[in-house]
Image (cartoon, helix red, strand yellow):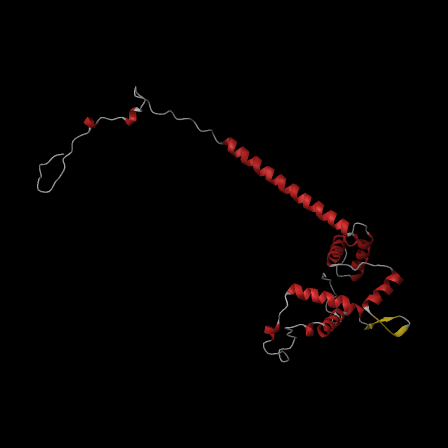
Length: 231
């Protein structure tokens, strides 16, 4: 399951009433039955309720997906009715099938296409706060064959693969440029010169390593009780 963010009208108390009603239904039908449920009121919260929690976030995500597909989408809702049949209640699955049969499939704009529509309205000199202009731009995007919402799974994979290839090429070009700079820097450093070794005499020993003990100067050595002793 995925989620997206959609903009609503400013300073409108009823803009999100549908979402709040859904949250209340989910709270009554699903959240209250999960171990470790805290609720939204500390007065009615159980004692040490944290100790009863045993599910991880991935587990809760799987449970909620099963609840949405098996319970919520199949339950008849009071707010879903068929025109001309006020006493008939529909489930979300039945209402969706009826709407598609009557009007065809219309992709719901995601946060990506909504931001793109607002950007296009701004670039064209329109008013991004005007809902009619944004709606017209959204319809234009939906009619474009290259719009994100019209992409198939194959198109998404192809575009992701092309983007990754482009990033790989850019990394290789950057690495090649860095290597060229390093090569130029090393080429500018002067090479090392060989230093000649010490001269050698007939015994094949460097003259700087040979010395005669007789050339050493005798130095006086001090010893207790014998101040005239010499070494």
